[in-house]
Image 1 (cartoon, helix red, strand yellow):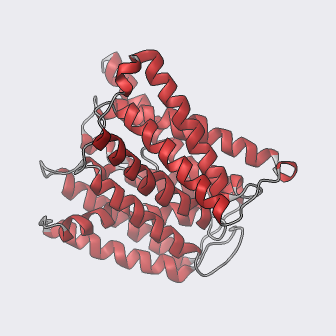
Image 2 (tube, helix red, strand yellow):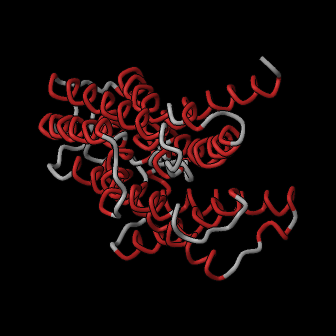
Length: 313
């Protein structure tokens, strides 16, 4: 194996572990930080830092884009980091991090449904995977929020479902709208726009920051999400997309939730009942079927391969 391939596989390992760990980090953040304001600050800080790094290493010219590209990137930023990730953060006040990760793992399934609505014809294997995935989601919803969640409101899992829907819509649109050609510039705009939107909504609903009440664990989780989730992991994702087959990179879709569940059990005392375990396994089987079937199609859009934090974690 060449040194370049070795480095690419190491970067893919970063995507596996870091994206899988962000759900646990979010769980610690929302223990003492307001959900939307903390997420908004995270994305705004990460977006500004990434934009500065692009200007520093690639030149200010790398940040140039047309008005259409800017507004398209801002729209994707609203759908991905603001709607998609923002609702995940809210949901983790009421569901365990492992359940949230398993529900979000179904994003490729939703993307297939949206593409079918837009006129594309999925294969029979893909359709079967969607059906199996919906059954798995039903089991997860019947199983409740999971032991170890902060709260137990009935709407917690449904917030995660809505988050996955927003992420799916953004993923599909990202393959159809004019966007900045530099992927790091695109991510910087998305995170900045999403961060501003989350801060605005958080302030509008009355969220307030009590710095004296924020625990060390919440600060550690927030800093981890900014530096590792939003900067390191996305940079690794962009790197491996250019050096490994997309079919290989797509395997994150069924590795991330497994890591998230294990970390939740080990470090947050989360436990899962029979419905939740069965539902999680069914969802993972469905995602494997869908990703394997879709990657065989030449026209598979990159959006189907993005998790709920692909451009923002």
